[in-house]
Image (cartoon, rainbow, N blue to C red; front, side, top):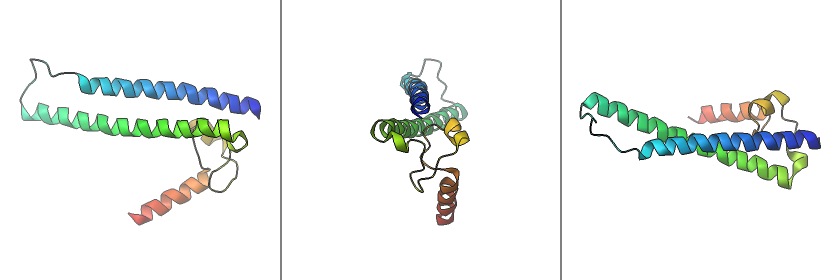
Length: 122
């Protein structure tokens, strides 16, 4: 169990670093000034605006993942016995889910229930 938790912690740290680098890259893109060859053509302007909006959405998603990773790392420090347990039902989170999403908080059953209830509310 201890080895498995240490492996997860290492994976989370690696993923945290990768996502921080992606976020920094997106933030740097937003700081680049428009060059002298910047066109005032409406189609190019709209394309640039669309790309900036997409980048902003990506930054929001990446920040959310970083918060989830921070939560998982905090859980490792405070409650290592609960690391691989669903925060809703307390059952084990499936190994494949942990492998695909190391910061997962919920088992597939609880996550599916949440998504279905969320879709019903829309």
